[in-house]
Amino acid sequence: QHYSLRRLAKPGITGYAATKGFRGGTNDLEHMQERTNLDIQYIKIWSLGLDLKICFHTAMEILLYKQKGH
Image 1 (cartoon, rainbow, N blue to C red):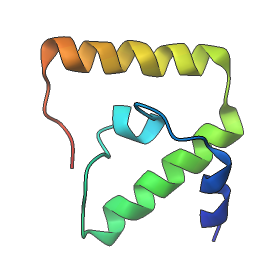
Image 2 (image 1 turned 60 degrees about the horizontal axis):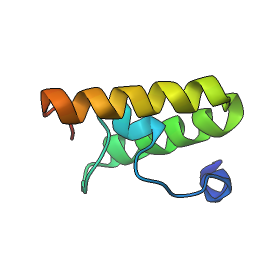
Image 3 (image 1 turned 90 degrees about the vertical axis):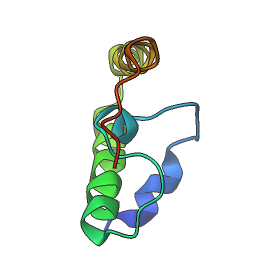
């Protein structure tokens, strides 16, 4: 329903959905919907603190090499 809101978020190296484990390609509609919901949530609650948290989680993901993505 609010899919067009995703266009308001500028693409970057990582994102809110990616730090929650929803990244990479998928054919699963549930995963696509959750990724869209998280992108919309990011737009609604954006703050510098949230961006810093995303950067921190991305760095930890890289350093610890967790593979929790879908």
